Length: 215
Image (cartoon, rainbow, N blue to C red):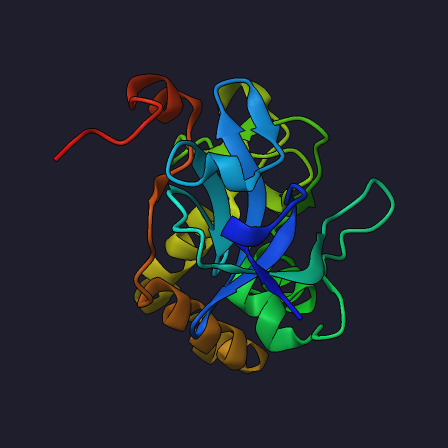
């Protein structure tokens, strides 16, 4: 049986949380120096980095969230597969956290590739999205759009999907590539979904007080 976060005696990181109908990932406690494990003592005091529909956000957790036994599976140097490791592993749960399944993201990137780019990227250290400026945690899925890092070549999954959706009327991807229709429908659904929290960036952690301001 899943325990609520406020009842948890251990720490949580790279975990799957549930709260009502909401299913999302808890990557850990966000600090200006990176991620660390989140404990019940951090509730209401520290920023949690969550992943929902492929979007990374900083938010305050209430403690009522259920911590499941499922864990996030992230890309490695040998495989770009990602998903959920646990009894409830399913495509719907993977999409609820990552936005797109690995096969859908691979298909999308492959269709858009011209020459050598874009490609799926891998990094063991934190990166910065070249467009949104958000921080992409190490091992988290992202896209590389060129081999010239000087001009910014790393794009977060959220930003990549937003750009593709914004260009749909001009690019006519659904017409040119009928096999992408289901992926396109999923992306448009993601962009229409409301998200909690604020964009994850180191600057945000440095500017916002560590504890909530009094009303």
